[in-house]
Image 1 (cartoon, rainbow, N blue to C red):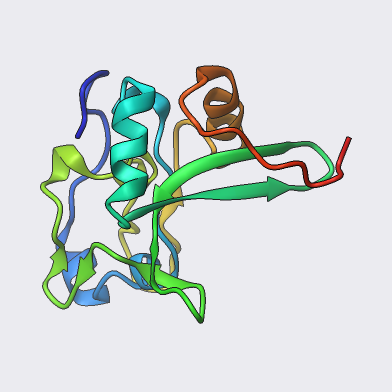
Image 2: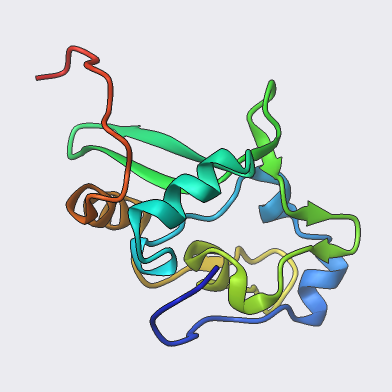
Length: 140
């Protein structure tokens, strides 16, 4: 899936194995347009049923971002790619937001998202032209 950019980020540590991927059990990480490279690749991902477009609606931004679907869509939790033994995707195919989550080093700490935030990524997605048109939702 990943077609561009360098492969910066953090790989799993022993802490991730001990933790069992609690972050992955909450929600998927966000993707960047450069991971797809074209509108066609985005449509293929959406049509696969494994990725979805989410809306970010807050005081700063009204935009969309692509990321993997929830594992439990009805409860809006988990990542579709997270399995009992970890992520089913090879590291280089994982979403940017997943690769840029720095694992905690000690119990009691939190893992730290680094790099391009989800709101910055949403702005990138809107500029990319890769996403399908958004139905009128009455925001403007």
